Length: 153
Image (cartoon, rainbow, N blue to C red; front, side):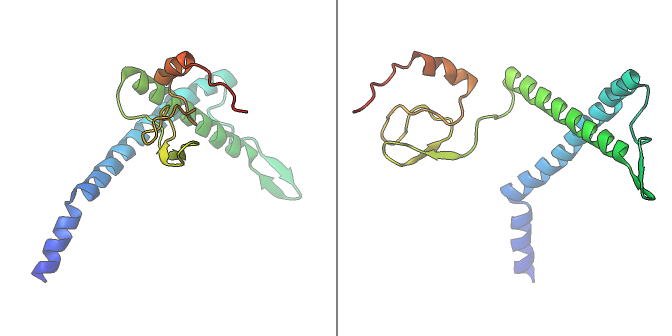
């Protein structure tokens, strides 16, 4: 039993599990802040423009059934505003140099067929220049300077 407890303690307090738990807690707190900004600030601006705090009063009666399309519009608008807020925050954090916002994933080098990062501009295996699947802002200048390759016949 003591052995089982020691194994569980090592698992629960190990780096990956603790990182995951902390990430989840910080993510939940961050989500609450972003949701509050979207709901309490941006949706109130929409309410000021349209004169209604939300569109839940918009209902279509069809054969005795109430279709509450206003609630759907409110939720859709809230979702879009939440997306805009998140996009703005990510752009702001990226501009400030905080966080790791590099592209994730791998692509196959067209020359040696080894896998490299999707935003790689040079293969780490064969050192060939490659066109990245996703261009990062800091790599755009390097790609513009690159000499165009002659077409092979």
